[in-house]
Image (cartoon, rainbow, N blue to C red; front, side, top):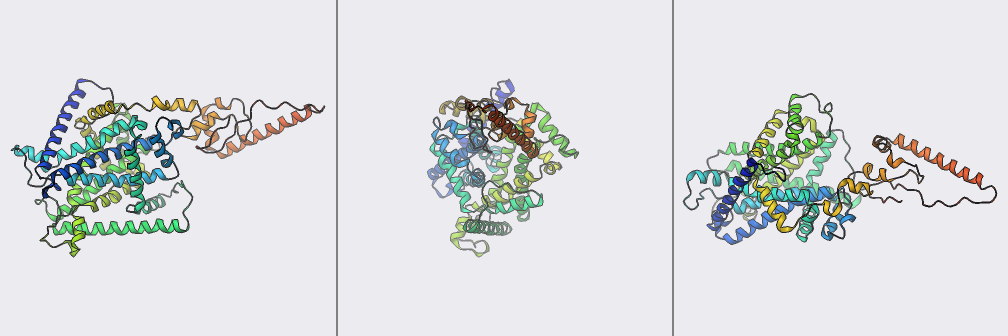
Length: 537
């Protein structure tokens, strides 16, 4: 659903989706108050509700914050230093070196960790019933976790993504956002998911690609500390996998009793693969969108997938996929949480004979969050980024795309748009253009936005400190060529130098009678060579 749509079908989807959301919220809180969820079953219902809402609100900020931080990265933070001081503080650190990548890595683990907390606090136990509801309602909304999936998607993810995508500055201009940003940076610093960096290196080597270096190469202690965390992450990941598989074969997880142990193991790896495919697909879809039809190859599955994404519904299938994908991924997360969370009572033997303290921690299920982050999320994203066309050239991608579009078409998550509109009205969010103008307006003023080609080059009047009259109005293709081809740029620099010498000779000859040439009214423009360099007029 696009902003402003009010056709009867869309309004109906908004209505029924909002009704489902309200019903799901009532059921979830009813279960927590009657001590029928994973965390409240021990009697602390109010503490469970507090943790549930803390996790949901934090999840909402993490999801919305990602849209804001990534979207504002190309824009100079100086433009909103006065109007949005907290947003400026975040951007000042986020836009340096590889800090955005660090944030995204920590954020990925944070999202999955928080979703597991939501499932732990609000997920119903196997025998849950409520207010004499019919059995079919219990089966649909409780047993399958449907109510939890709807609530988490609409309240904790999609509604803040909607607002943060167009009101980036207002959304993160608060100290809760600042705390969340530094929390993600801290998670990355701990090294729990550092093995992802090793996977990235392997993938780039297999693809014959050189990794982009945003910071100087690590040396000495920094290099040692980095690889120590990589090994630590690998050790924790290996232990988590071993203990989880052992618990599945011993039947000591929160998996439904009716599911055989072998099927549980197969389901675990199957769902991890589905999550991985969906995580990789979003990367591949955005990557392939920049390729020409010839570059996309001739594989029938890849061509069919691209046709659906880019040529139908005026391009709305791509954002439609993102909505359906979100619903599918969250569904898989909740099932994976049930599969990986261990359930060992006080009078039972611990998995693999581990200590009671460690067993109590594993019963919380956070090892599943680590496994999912590294093996079912980041790894697949890296592969899809290195081989986007190959990722599309499978029938699995095509089938999953169709499923996601079907889910989006049902309008089952349209309640997120209603929540987003209410949130936007209460918070007084305004579009970013109100504060910093559009990208075109920023470029016309020579402000940093998107790329050097579109910012610095049109604002310059020449190379090597020499004016080249009219170059700022040169055809875009010439400016593109001057930036992308070093030989062309070198040639133009030589021409500029020759012009400078010729101009100097003319001045010397005209000043033979001792009359010096008048100084220029303004110094020539100079080019510093980077996005962060100021253009001197």
